[in-house]
Image (cartoon, rainbow, N blue to C red; front, side, top):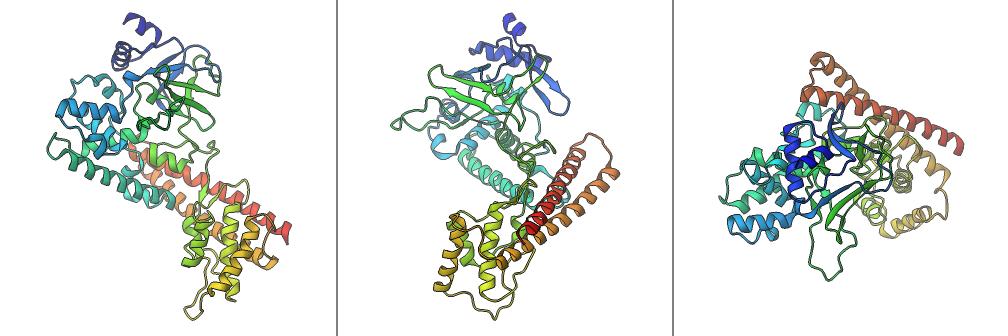
Length: 444
């Protein structure tokens, strides 16, 4: 134990207990990282010696990795039930496990449990209604989906338990959030053969879950099926005294806020503005065509180039509108107004679709000068409309922060995040406006 304490530096009794517990289960701490609190990111790992690019520096043995199999075996041993893995998803099983452990503080996993944050108050499903309604629509949509998933998982777990053990919704909500923010993809290497029985895909991994996110890092993390350890390296050199980062994935701030409860800010090169709602929903025939050709939804502006995906979706909508000899409704739903106009016949629509596919296949750059002018006019109006919405939201967040102050509370943090997201998206939209206008001038 003394060796473990010397090799992996810790700052609190909780962290020391975690390291001692891990060491007793086969973890060899090494001398290259320590646990430390950082301003802005909270608790994380710091390099004690240089960490070289692509050189593994953290090895977590299988005995410490909590998977659906861990839970299945635990439930069978503790409650004499053999059907947990067949009845629940991996996320549900891991949340169930943490819920049970939370209610039993003297359990074998106590050091790990005490290392998990006591609350997750800034993740999507916890955002207050008044703040949420001033955040971008894609955040609101993600939060709605997250809340549905949480409710559905609670229903599944509570139904499975059926009085087996007392788990309250509040405890489950905490456990579900812990899994959602901290679970890891195992990515086994070498992968098991196709004939092998299904293996867990995600896990909770002590210590690894303390690593914080950076969008500029490429992470190499996998479960080594030969050594039976979860192994980590990154593409970055980390100097002694610097925080060790990994990447949670190529996520924009909107996704980071909903799933993890934090944002990066303007330095996040994955930031973009979702304009799906501003694009609106076309008639069903057009929507189906866009779906079939992989062009439905996920419409974004990044301020660095005019999105080809957005352009191609608008080209088809405008093409259909032009065929009906109707001006497209620009800036909201690009569709034909009026109920007296008949939609294109099947044969005519197929002809239009064939012409549009020539653009998708790269045979022609765009459909026609007239079509392209209307496409860019639509895109310009969409950009203006979303920009106006973000400016209104930014003013609201600024007023709220002035009235509320910087108390360090959850609400203060969420107001700060909301303001930063609006500022970032306004800059992206303003840059997109300049790009759109420059492209129009170059084309026409």
